[in-house]
Image (cartoon, rainbow, N blue to C red; front, side, top):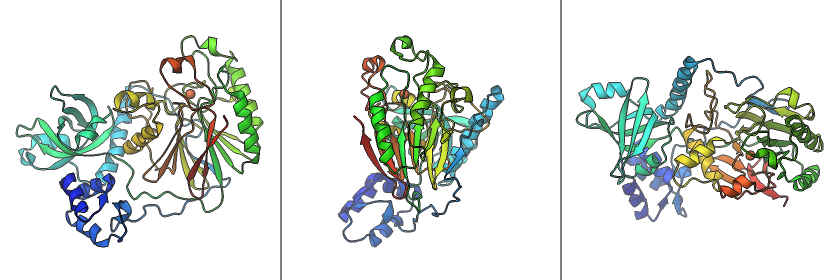
Length: 465
Ligand SMILES: [Fe+2]
């Protein structure tokens, strides 16, 4: 593998800086000539070499989409598709499916060996090769290195990430149950694999988002928490007034529609509406006051009345009696198509887990959390922690297809990011700081909406404070 520092130095010699994505790509390709090819074709006023400067890389999106009529199409997450779990066989199937699908995304970029084959044969000792595994365990050693146990359907192996190697920064962000590829060498005794490079399923660096061919605007919000005494009703009515003049055609709400009942200890003291049906009735009334031209797409969150295990089903009919006709109920997560723009809606419960597992992660940086999901091509990699997952026949938390927009909520803190062409949006909340958040030192950014022009994918934040 070509050393990252050598790549950066070669570009510096020609007075060029190089984006880390390009360094990673050159390492993956393992083709030293590629550096010279890039330099030979670089336009004269370039300062930083980006993926656009890699010869032969073209947009991976063909720019055509089958467009449904009416303009909102639910690609996944229709009512009744979340399914139930039927015992341990489903769990086995679930994790195998997760491994196969995420593993094949990595296998597209490198040839990998089955773990058992690697350990059994003495042929591959001290020879560079790649394995793809699910992280069964990961911890720090007494010397400060990271050691992970990687598992594939054939076996398991301990993988060492040395703290003095560039791969260490990737290893610090390893999460249980994510699927990664590791390039490196097996030890003489066949017991330890020394990692040189990590490959995540990731978004391709040449991913190019689809853009709508006709005008259209969408508004993104989440976490209303109707029924709570901290729901900002006045701010909401300003938002409703604004929507009457705003030429948006779509409103997407990514969960926590109401505050719910019994979600946390002592919640009853913070509720203005203490009946779950009445909370949804009020939420429905608020939607009825919005312009009827809007197509409203609603998915649930952890405060909503449905089961907590993800994928969460749609809000049941008996709670949605007051919801207007222009409202489409989807599951959490769901993929919806707006004029060809694919929006992946996910409430974001797994962010709680990521904050505990990824160094530097925090509620203040929800944009980074969305990037972590995209790199792993998974919305909730860590199993068995705060995010309950219903292991169905298919892993619905895998990010496939790649959306144009990833819309999350849950953290109540605004975050916008663009990662390899995918726009990540977290619009915050419509609830002011709760006693619990104060205790946890979480400073919400309430009463914001994010609008996106579907022809440019340019986001804009609108404040109703
Ligand atoms: Fe919330």
